[in-house]
Image 1: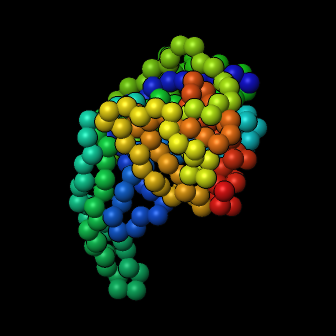
Image 2 (image 1 turned 180 degrees about the vertical axis):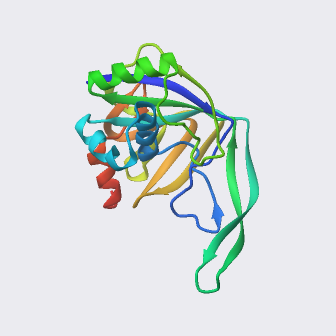
Amino acid sequence: MKPLTFLVSFFRSHFKRHETKKFRSTYILPPPTVVWGIVGAVLGVERDGLIDFVKENNLTVGAELCSFKGLDVEKATLMSWDEGERTFIRTVEDFEFLIEPVFRIAIYAKEDLVNELKRRLEEKVIEFDLFGGISDCFLKDLNVEGHAKFERSTNVRGMIPIKLMDGFSEIVEGSRIVSVFYLNTMFYQGYNVEFKTKQPIKTVNGIAVWDFNDVEKFRESY
């Protein structure tokens, strides 16, 4: 097993929050299942094979929001086909976007996978296009970082279940904390915030990381 971190930026991003319907709010950082998709896209893993790929490589992932230039709301007209009426139904919805976000992605997985991922990122050899959540959120840049360390810690950044929260170890000016529903579990996502947890959890360079079994617990309501 080997850790790795890299930076990925988009011109804008929208990772739809599970609990929103008419107003399409965004997570402020990609949750674990989205990061799986990012890694899979780089390596050319088809959607149907992603879960097996994650389990086989013990792919453990997390993310933090490093910077962004603003939060924007746009109105979009969605068109769905009504088979009975033989016509399109038009609905207007609000979409929330992060403007020019930079995310740090943390990975802990089998060494061969990490080495191949690192090579592809450095050489910009990406199998499938990367998007910031939806297809009109285009990739801006990718950069592999240096030393990465895996450890269990009670001081973590990124995204943690609310039940694990035991306070804050650091809050920086301009910080943001968002309560979100992911799968069947309530989480805090933080920007410029370091959380304190009730027990040590898996981290890479201080970012909380989660594996397949963790995600299954979130589905069952952690």
